Length: 88
Image (tube, rainbow, N blue to C red; front, top):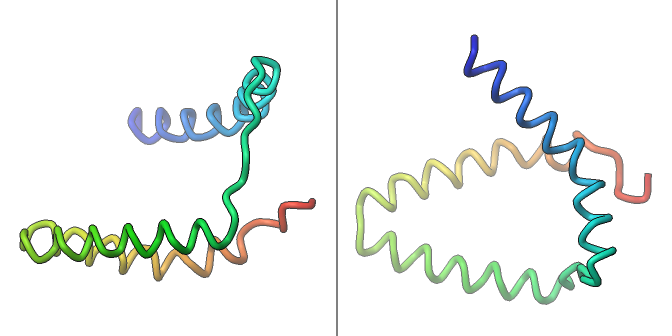
C-alpha cells in the first residue's frame, strides 16, 4: 500500500508541478520548441533502426522490446482517446 500511495502521490505531484516548471524555464530565457511531424518521423525511423540492431545482438533485448511494443499497441487507444485535444 505504501508503494502504491507513493507512486500515486509522485504522479500527481509531478503533473501539478509541470506548469510551474515550464514557467520557470521560460523566465530563465529558454524557449522550448515542439518538434515538427517530419522531425519526429525521422527520429522514429532512426530509433527503430537502433532497436532492431540491438535486438539482433541480444535475445534478452529483443524479448523486452517485444514486450514494450505490445504494451505500446495496447496503450495507443488510451493515449488517443483519454485526453482532450491540446487546445482545450
